[in-house]
Each structure stands twice: as structure tokens, then as C-alpha cells.
Image (cartoon, rainbow, N blue to C red; front, side, top):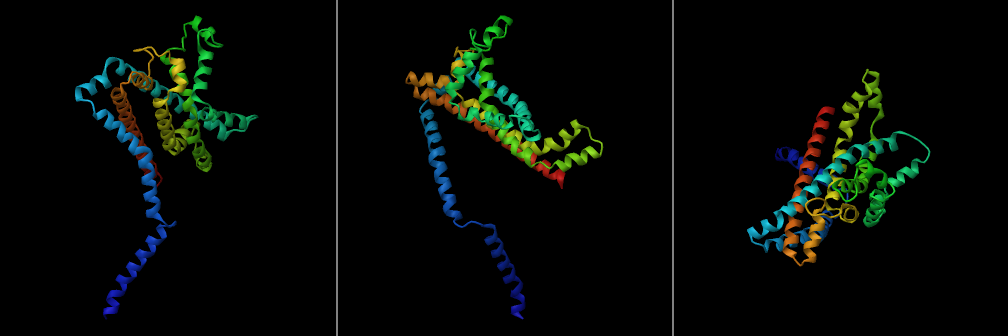
Length: 295
């Protein structure tokens, strides 16, 4: 009698052990997890913690003066404003480039596909010099634009151009594989039911690629906030006008104001982290919404 009472319990425990074993496909979970945490801690957590410790050496008043003086606030506006504009532009045109590369066949497609990765491999200083030579008042293109009242070099507009250049691959390479894996049968079914092309894109395609678009946007924005090499040549670096926050950090370091540089860096770090958290939350919400609609 007792055997019959305990047999379901033992069977359920045995099934639970089997499920746990099946979930762990690869052995060494604890070892790999510990190594991963150690690796991330040494490379990410420790340097960032030291940055906060350096800034903590300032009093509250000194921190506010170092991190929120008028010149520093102007550099924040230039940095985050141009980064946001460039990321939004890349969101649109990165999707367009990825769409063309996935959905169409044309001569030189492989060359165009390779050119997308050029900003990854090109040193940022080279990109900055090239854009300055192109857009300056005596440059190949700038000499025709400036008489028309379009001045790009040494203005925030030039910074946006540089950030678009370095951020485009992040959107393209994030969206491209999702478009390749998209089920074209759903688009054909929607078309057979009378949906227009705009409706197919908004109702079928966009929900599928939205998380990838947000990821590409976040990566392009984060890269733009920290970009220095390609921007410093074309920005003109005029305080209150076209001076970026990373350059201001370098200026403070050259003046041996290490605590002030750390204060500006902490503000950039916290702001970027909050924005990335918001975007990750939007991604999770989009995935839940998409999953709920498909069920």
C-alpha cells in the first residue's frame, strides 16, 4: 500500500530530474557562468567603478560645477542631440539599405554589401579627415554648398554627417538577418486578402523587424555618443557651439583635472545606461506584444 502511495511522488521527482538534465545541454554551467562574470567584472565593472570612485572624490558642489557648468551642458546638448538625429536617420536609411540588399538582386550587390562594413574597419580619424576634405569650404563638395548657404563642416550639422557615417552599419547588420528570415508567405497571404503594400509593411513586416530596428538604433546611438575620432576633425570644436562631451573630457585631462573629467564621464555613462535600459524595455514590450498577437 505504501509503495503505491509513494510511487507517484518518486515518479514526479524522477521526471523533474530528467527535465533539469535536459535543460542543461552543455556541461559546466557553474564554471562557465563564473568565468563569464569574472571576465565581465574585470573588463567592465571594475573600470567603471573606478570612474565613479574618482568622481566621488569631489564634493557635491564641485561635482555640480564640473558636470553641469554652461560649457559642459552645451557639450551634452551637442553630443546627445546630434547622436539622436544621426541614429534616427540611420533607423530609416539603414532599414532601406537592408531591404534593398535582402529583397533585390542587382549588379555589384556584393560590393555594396561589403561597403556597408567599411565604417567598421576604417579608422575613425581617417573618416573624419575624409569628411572634412569633402565638406569643408574649400572641399570637393563644400565649395559648392557654402555659396548656397549650406555649411556643414565645423558645425553641428557636420557632426551629424560623421555620426551617420559611423552608425549606419549597426542598423543594417542588425535588421538584415531578420529580413532574410522573415516569412514571405505571410506577405503573400496578406496580399491575397487585399492588403495594400503599405498595409503589408505596417501590419506584417514592421512588427517582425521592430525589435531588430530598436536594437540597431540603440547600438548606433550608443556608438555616436562615445564617438571621438571622426567627429573631432569636422566639428570645429567651438565651445558652446560644436564642442562634444568626449572632447571636453580630453581637455580636462590635458589640464590635469582628472576629477572633473570623471564627473563628465559619469554623467555620460549614466545617461547612456538609462537610455539603453529604456530601449531594452521597449524591445521586451514589443516582443510580448508581437507574441501576444501571434497566439
